[in-house]
Length: 352
Image (cartoon, rainbow, N blue to C red; front, side, top):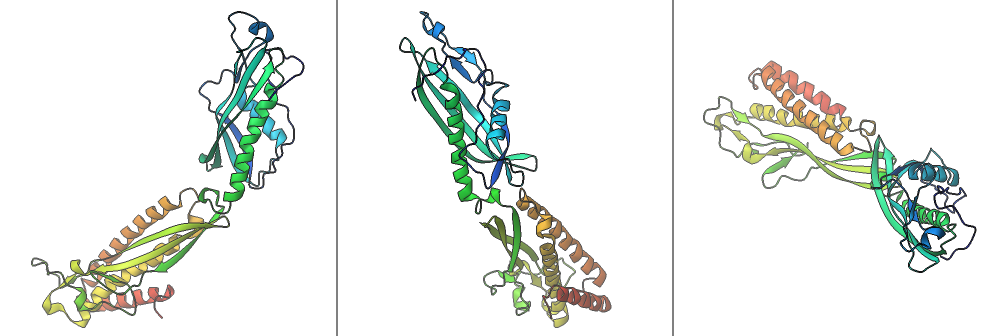
């Protein structure tokens, strides 16, 4: 860039000229500008004609009027549409400076450099989206500094255009740009193989699933090792995060045992009801994961916390079940629990 024009006093603050930019944000607005440069004292060090003429010349520090943060924010507020119904984006200025040298008498070479990180403002945090580094070089007469201000604006425009292009492509598929989420559940009901039985009405427990050796010192007839877990992934479509979760309600055969004298239908039912209780808690866990209970910023941690809560609930229910039925020896209590469990399984449409 070559420049000519009227001289500007070397120590006069630079004022960015507000003008409509060739960018029309459809997905965001610039909510804030942060000056995070290590040295915030001056944005430029410029040579003046009188300085260049001296044998040992030094550039003069010059800042934007009001400081970089306020000046750039005011400039963008006046030059870009400001639609607060869109996503709030923060521009973090990691580098934004003018550097000059005077290798030839009467001429000044300069460059504007910028390193900008764009972040999404959400729930009091700034989530990094993308960074851009750019710059421009110019050559000017020592007596004329008018090229500096347009060069600063051009570098800002370059960074904004880069971000605008990126967000227009990513708005519908980037997880941080999603506007809502949906949760989808599927039950893992694969046939029993190896050491695991997964919950299915078509495949209730049988005594062949109890393959561990009975604990000699135990006073109980049998023990079933049951639990539940979830796994999943997410995908973003049209700005919506779809959480695809697979629930696994299972029994580990190698940790389940039964004494030979106890292998009858009544005792097997008692152990099956332990398995049914796990299924009920897993269904309750699903109910806790409705979209209103999750946040875009932290849905994974919330799910994990609710899972831990549900696992504790499962353990409490198992203890309550064994306590009230006296481990199945109270037949009346056992019948009440049978009915109670079946009724709740029906509310979740697990059982007809």
